Each structure stands twice: as C-alpha cells, then as structure tokens.
Image (cartoon, rainbow, N blue to C red):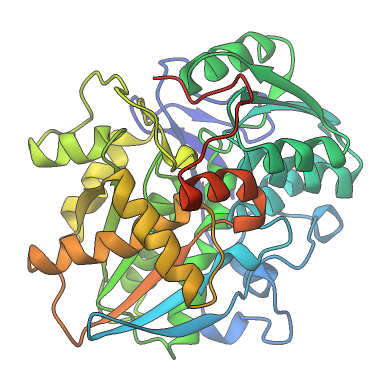
Length: 387
C-alpha cells in the first residue's frame, strides 16, 4: 500500500492525485508497507533498481532507468580521516538527481501523466528532462536565468521547453507555481517519490561497506532533499535491524546563502525568514527558503549531526584540491571538502574516523564558471547570480 500523508495536518491522499502539497500548504510524505530485507536485493542489477522491492513503483513496465546508481565509493586521503568519496557526479546526466528522476518519472508513467512542469537551478531540471525523454513524456523546465550554461544546454538537448526566469531562485519558483495551476508539477523538492530515489544512496553506502555504516556522511546542503533522504534511508536500515548504528549526517552550506546553518546555530525548529545577501559559486545549493527546513533540522538533531558554512574562497580551495586529485566536480560539490576542516576544528569529526563524502555534480556542467573561479577573470555575459 502507498499513499501520501501530510507532514503537518496528517491528511491522506492517493498518489494518483495531481497535487504537489497538502491543502494546508505543508509537505507531503509517502507511506508504504515495504520492509528492507537484504536477501531481496537484486545483486545482478547495478542500478538503484537492485532495490526494486523497496521502491514504491507498482508496475515493472513503468520503470524508467538509464543505469543510475551503484556509483563508485573511492578512497581519498585527507586530514588523517578514513575518507571515501561517493562519486555521484558519474551518473547518466552528471548528478545524483538521476536517482530521484528515475523514480519520479516512473510514477508519472505509471499514473498516466504525459506532460509536466518542473523548476530547478539546473541539475534536477536536466535529470527530469532526460528521464522524460526516455519515457516519451513532454516537460517544461523553469530555471534561473543565471544557471550554468552547460546545464541549460543539457536541458534543451533533451527536448524540454526551457523557461529562463530573471531574478532569484525564488522568482523561478513563483513562475513555475503559476504554470502548475494547469499542469502537473513534478517537483523534485516537493514530490516524495523523488526522495524515495535519493534514499538509495544510503542503501548503497551501507551495502558497499558490508553493512558497516560510516561514522559520518557529508553532503552539500541547499533545499536539503539529498540530506533528508539519506538520513531516512539510514534510519530505515537501523530501525529494521539491517545496520547497528546511525551515522552523523553533516551538511555544508555556502556562507552567502545559509538559512539552515543560521537556524541550526540559533536552535530553531525551522528556518527563519531569510534573504540571500550575496551571490555564491555554489549556485546549486543557493536556497534561501528551503521547503524541507523543518524536517532537515529535526533530522540533524536526531542523529547528532551538524551544519556548517564555507566561504567563497574555501569553495575555490576545495574545487582546486579535488581537481588536482582527479575529481572534476562543479562548485556546488566542492563545498564539502573545506567543510571537513570546520567539522574537525569543532571536534564533530575526529581523526581516524570513517567518513563518506557525497560528490554531487559533474564539473563539465559548469566549465565556464569553473574557469572564472580558477582564473579570477569573469566573462561578460550580461547575467549574474542576483541576491
């Protein structure tokens, strides 16, 4: 059985209901009756669908897959930690968002949706456009005008209709809300099926480590779908006796857009009203109004986790260091490396601990932006990331 349940008022809805949130305005969650059992893993399937029995798609014929998942876990020497990098940037469209897109587009195919709208800073738009093309669905993607050119061209290449919106990321969200009055809104931030796909990263890490969970997992943190989904994936495994402890979940935000960090530091249960005050190279996590803020802060507290920030200079340092060691990631991914330094200074991490870091997006999506960061010379395009 599967159904939506409101995280606020507890109202229930059928998953075929064409809504993206509850009538009360709160986020919908998905309830299922699946139980994780290791002997039900399809070991011969090296995609997220090796966990077919635990993913909420009822019809095998509806599954839309392009080989997403089962990304390498690579050992990496840094600060005397037992560090491993989860190379999600090697996914089919170049980011971890492919996991969520595979499950979400499979749902749309299953319930008969032929066209949808979505908003994104780039990676989720590219992923949903690609999987829509694979499934034969039509889509319109709304992005900020300042989004990386590589991501925008990627979206166009998949045949999606691209709407570039002037202004902040919030302006893009407002634009897609208008379109959602008449079209299905397949939002990677609102729709819980997308998060079901992202949970498989937790499953994979546990399985790749022979069901021995790391001491901590570090992710970039913006709207927070990845962070929250991984927390819930590990929590499921713990509650069902598959693993014997919960890792600390650690999130890293850019100093120039850090509502979750500020809320965490102030001990708030949800982010306060926040306005981004300066642009950031980590555009993929520039989320001034994180939809899942309450849920994320609750998860941080429940697992003894933490949130930190890094400066624009530190983002550059992390990008350079990773590149010089063979990992070409976009600036959003690079926030994690210097975040490690902060967590070590705060004694949240200790030398010798096993830590997994998620590298979320491919540097080929942002070649021009990376060149500007590395050379210090900004090309004149008439666009800029507004504040």
